[in-house]
Image 1 (tube, rainbow, N blue to C red):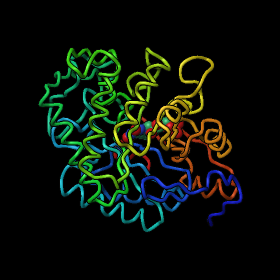
Image 2 (cartoon, protein in one colour):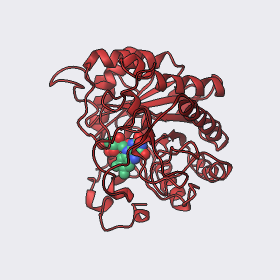
Image 3 (cartoon, protein in one colour):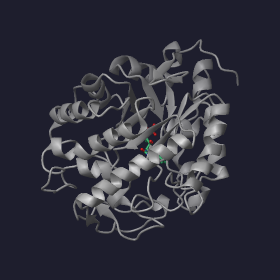
Length: 368
Ligand SMILES: Cc1cc2nc3c(=O)[nH]c(=O)nc-3n(C[C@H](O)[C@H](O)[C@H](O)COP(=O)(O)O)c2cc1C
């Protein structure tokens, strides 16, 4: 299918993120697939998965959550890592293939913290406080039952986590990624620090919202310091979690102001905000979306994600929320060529959960 831009030109304008030229405003959202080798080395299945989206016209692919270190960060068995040279070499094949198709690729660096349910390096899990996580392990990633009780992190553990993110970002650059997205969302370690009921620390990383966002800011700063000013770095933020879909920040818009303002001082180049509906009011029945608040308080490029399924809605989200990039998850799974279809005015296929979340399928048979 040939790319045209005659429909929805607003989706097909270029955007430069700290020197990286995106040919349009349509990104693939990060999606864990648990289809790496057991040792975290990216597989051929992953290469063909990512290449299809690059061919399909997405300007930017954000990788699935990738573990940064060989300690406590891995969340799922068969999750890819970016912690050692073998991982780097494996990802290099993928970034090369993606670049060949004209797309850019960012690596999502994810520390699972208390939500780790499969880690080849450790049985122990760590978190801001030693509290049993809400909810149950995710069955479609091979887990079952309650999450283990994590160990409370010491100051040394915090330093180790920061160093893990730094090393992983260096590795990501060596692997040919065009940028990194730090996973600060969806209930994983950094979001555990941000979340009032997960974080009962009495030091400077707990208590007030200013303290709870501190580690997120410090990780971004540390990565920026190590990589210098010319490499795109961003962070993903959400209210909802994989183990608590309806969570809302207790301080509403005031919390959003503090979180986004603090993050904007950390040297990042973009913010990726995910909500169930990207354009829905963030806190009450009325009011601004979280993406709009992110833009307001940071003035950085903002990526918005959450049920942006049609080009019409994508256009509306970009226009009404003053955001820069739409990141597509399920709509992309159902339409690998979503940008080409949008450009040509073709009909989109509906997402069919049964095809993608078949409970009888083995983990590795997750959709290609
Ligand atoms: C199979 C699957 C795996 C996902 N894995 C990740 C992940 O690794 N990192 C992440 O930040 N979000 C992950 N998500 C969340 C998506 O990035 C996205 O936020 C979510 O699907 C909502 O967007 P959508 O309505 O466009 O699908 C995953 C979602 C799905 C469906």
